[in-house]
Length: 124
Ligand SMILES: [Zn+2]
Image (cartoon, rainbow, N blue to C red; front, side):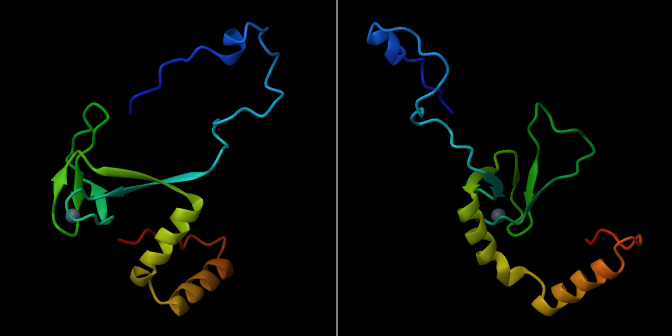
């Protein structure tokens, strides 16, 4: 991602003094919006991707990814940043793949009932 070059601040152009702190609302500054990162297969756009366990650590910060859908493998996975709204929509679209709602409720209930038990096993 190319970064914008530093621009001469307005207060210099206007020949004024450096404003103390940011009292007036700054424009174009990050508003602290929460974002969610998702990964997609560059080939079939599926998000059913995972890091390949190769026995080696990711080299240079780059991991090898594998698409479970089309069997694509590589390091240049697509990363998308979604806002909370977009992410909710994204989850909505995915809903089809989630387990039955009743199953979820059952599980949820079970989780509450056995909150302090060790029933926390990972599923494959
Ligand atoms: Zn794929």
